[in-house]
Image (cartoon, rainbow, N blue to C red; front, side):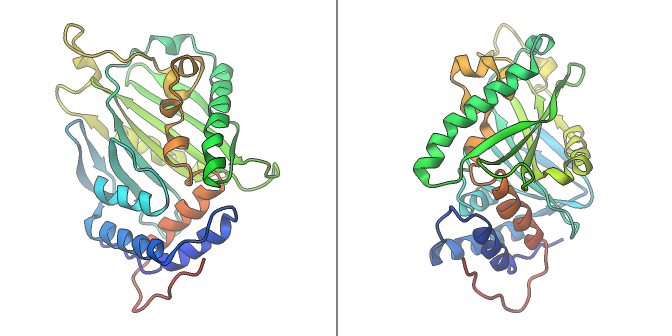
Length: 304
């Protein structure tokens, strides 16, 4: 399968009109956006296929989705005004014409994360830590002229399965000050713990669609398998580095606050500042909806 990119001109125009607080894109930004999409088109891999994720794991990519490798994914994120950051493993989206979601995958080499704090955590304290962390990250948004974000509450409270070493949680967010009934974005977060760190697979979608689409994230999580020697069970206490924080820091609670790990606990907010809330719908879902379409003979230049 090859996925077209020319209709991204319309997607970019719609995205810019949906986020009034953002500056209009320059001609150079529009050109880079289209070039990044074309590069992703050429490098994309359609499922079913086995995808190698660095030297850590492999993903049995199911049918009906496509994978964009790290270099091209990073370029796409940068073209949308985001910070690709370290450990990017790639992006996944659906080839279905009516699907409005995408997944960003990342490996964080944190060291071995002990999971014993999952027995005692208080999900309301975790939520409070996330709200505080978001307020801190809003300081940077203000300096960059970006819309501020606020956390509404749990879509799915943190759940950890000690048998599979899998963590799932989801938050509802919206643009700060927006009416309660306004559109809001959701990031559905799944994590797979390994010997040297963890793989995160963050699904971005709309609140109205998250219940229907979260099985997609769970399916992708189940399709992830660590390589021999990289599994959680392969941990060697005599040689391996142990992370300074536990599972609570991955969600954002008191542990994250004490350690100053808002960048970890709020990785999705901090590293994808523009692909969140309303921006997630404009620059994320709309982006991939147009990205799946076939390339026409000519595409009009985007108008911000």
